[in-house]
Amino acid sequence: MAQIPLPRPYQDTAPYWAAAKEHRFILQKCRDCGEPQFYPRGVCSHCLSSALDWIEASGKGTVYSFTVNHRAPHPGFAGKTPFVLAIVALAEGPRMMTNIVDCDPETVKVGMAVQVTYDDVTEEVTLPMFRPA
Ligand code: ZN
Figure 1 (cartoon, rainbow, N blue to C red):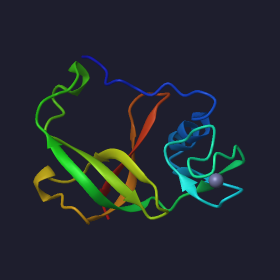
Figure 2 (cartoon, rainbow, N blue to C red):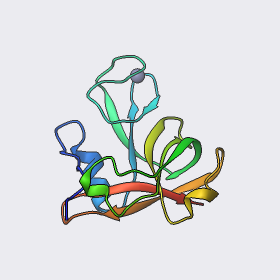
Figure 3 (tube, helix red, strand yellow):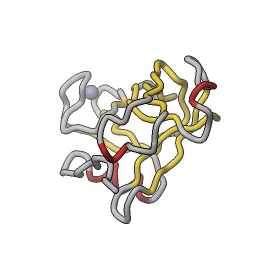
Figure 4 (tube, rainbow, N blue to C red):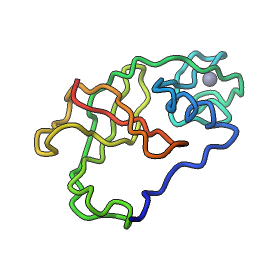
């Protein structure tokens, strides 16, 4: 069976994926302006500073927007439909594209409280996802 496309960690994202593998959810926070950001990158998306720290995030958020996907966008998703593709507003502020899991897709609503959970897809890669809080 085909594997879903998986992230390939590199310098800017490796700490994020290493934490996910340990079932920890971390975000970057700028040392200069104090803003947190997602996705991980080399500079602050608010002030372009490269002074970025990693913080332990709460793993809490709310559904900002979502769609229920009924067609597999890649052979690796065959058998996984329907699934919820969502944008979650993290409690710390940034928004994150993710999946809402562990519930009937038809029960997902905008504004619903969600909490991070982890899908250990392979020995090397764990994907943070969200489930109803
Ligand atoms: Zn900044």
